[in-house]
Length: 60
Image (cartoon, rainbow, N blue to C red):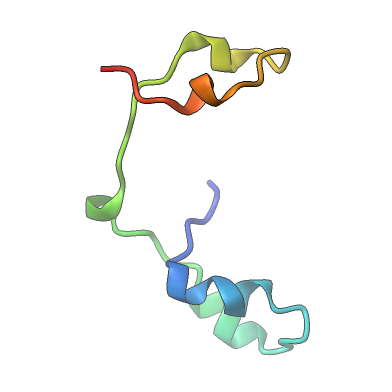
């Protein structure tokens, strides 16, 4: 399962000079599902030949 980081932790996670693995381990927590949003997307997203802004538009 991929990790979803809180935006405030992104810099810490991506800092290549940060040797503190204990701190990084503490960032690996479940993201609050209440803050997630799900959107239906076009089936065209299943093909890498399709590449347009329309692919990320919300389908109502």
